[in-house]
Image (cartoon, rainbow, N blue to C red; front, side, top):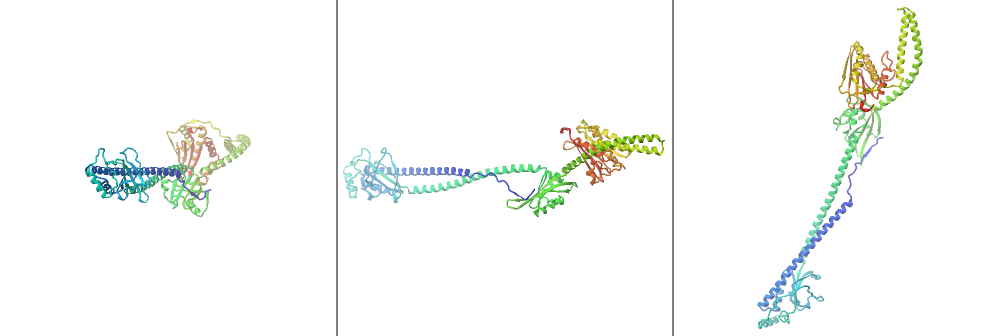
Length: 593
């Protein structure tokens, strides 16, 4: 039973969220590692630049001090001035010379001279005299400073006191508040340290900006990478879903196209969208004619009226009707119909299912005929045996009485008529017995062309007497068939004689034989006689049905029985103005009969 159905398309393959999450985590780790590496590289670059700048300053101070001491007899006051001038350079926070106890001998800030450089912390030099020590120190509210220190080397080995001029310089130093003792004098040859403190704020600000830029770029890369992963998986899912959909669609199309029932589908506007091969065969209409057409343009009114029933909520299931299509042929149908609704309950179309009942009804008629024939055959066999013996006695007495009278007498004529009627009755009984007994065939491979030729020769005289022309058409490629030649000849003669009797005023008898599209052999006997009425077509093979005044009604019944014994088919086509055609369809030998 068909009801309204919702169409729910299958969704495509879904991407696992864990795959996307894992890919995003991996991408995040890669971005973080690259950012850390970039930051470390920037810090190393900053350290290198600051170290080189500090070393350059130290060497410049040492060179200046060395030059002044050698040429101009510098003392501590001049070195102090040199440090003050050097400390004014950009990014230089301080520059100082310390003794080994950490006391400031000279400083870019004069107020810090003769004080401890950093109380509680002793400056320790590691490595050789020429090696610089680096240190990043946090000064609290003063920020951080990059500090470089090493041994101070303003005096070269072999330097000697210049004499009185040096005393004069020392006196000048005292006047200018120099240190109470000159640490740069030849007597003070103990090791001193020089310390340069550079401001790292510009570098750190640049690093912070670089970090912000790196974070921004990393975030953009992360988003792009994440979007790329998602797009990739979506594309993969889309392709997989599309491939699955195409496979499913192709599978469904193959199934629906080759269904043994006719299927007609319309859209929400009532136009035909699908028309399978079975529907084409049933209606005799081609898909190209029906595509995008309204059903009422070519389909029978009975089918089109079903739409109103569906709109009223009626259920149409296996409704039997007979429909006449545009080709003029009438087909008994079993019709089912339904409306299609989507998930939202919106109407999107209708489906009409047609099932041809012609074969079903033929089988039903065949079953009824077989039941009738079985009953009649059993009755005929019993009656025939009971009647044949008295008929023999009657015929014998009639022959005796006929011999008792002279020729030409009325009594002798009456006896002759009695003998003829007994013979006719005996012939009917013989036909009854033939009809009642099982048909036993003696099959052999037979070429139909000579068989048809011989059968036609047997009725040529009767046809000529009725002014009937015989036309035969036998294809050249007819393969031999497995039949009983005598029985098939009996069938053909019966059909020929029926055709001749249907044309009392003359006409044409046609016999055609050819292969059909299914590999069977088709033999057609047609005439141009008066034809058979439409209401009698389904009765022509029934026993005792006849439209002739002198017919027994068993001829076509026996033909039908013989044809069925060959596992073949016989069909009748007739109209009152075109005559009658009997079509015998014999299975090809390859079918293994």
